[in-house]
Length: 267
Image 1: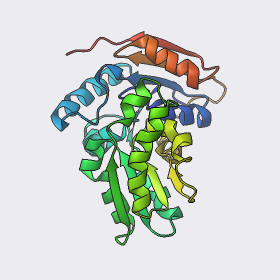
Image 2: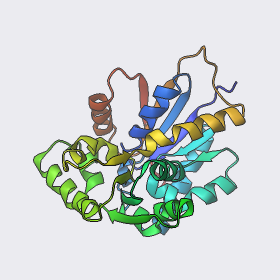
Image 3: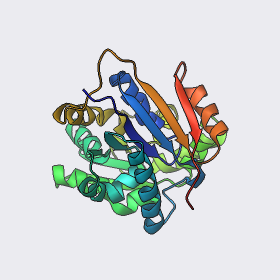
Image 4: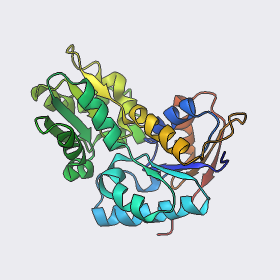
């Protein structure tokens, strides 16, 4: 047994889709969540800028003596997962490979759309993962720079959001896909919106769901699972406006026990 916390980070509220699944399937674990809303969105930054940000966050989480790091941000995963896995002294889990494997296993026509941030689509991380599974797969990666700001400001159900989502979604439908991957952890918040945009059956892949078996496997293999007799807990560290983050949290996550603290940026 290991009573240390699991650390995870995202550019803001998007990683809450990951946390929701983690707390559901691992109710005895402690979590430390870093929400970097002061510097969101990540997808529009340069790779060098994001590297410095990731370094700062991972060092902070390591200072909290975490036992496992989950990169709850697809943009960070697409660029830095392998390097962090090589240099950090604890296991590091990403989102992309499990999502690609799940998508590949359920698609009939082998045509996929990845909706993601500009940096994630530029990296072609999902395309590489899907082609590694089947070199006959056809993939379109669609950059969606307008979506994260919409979600961060809690405008998910506004009238304009439907039109913005349709702008991106139409590209996937035109490509004749049967499977769409949410290549940004924010996007599952828009799942009800996307599902209203077509009468065609589409598989929607949520990496928050598909990464759970990987997390469980790492915990077991490394013998670092928490005591099953203990209730879990969540501590949030927020780099920007804590009240906006907490308002979002309370609206979408009822009856969640947590503590929230302000993080002071190094730069």
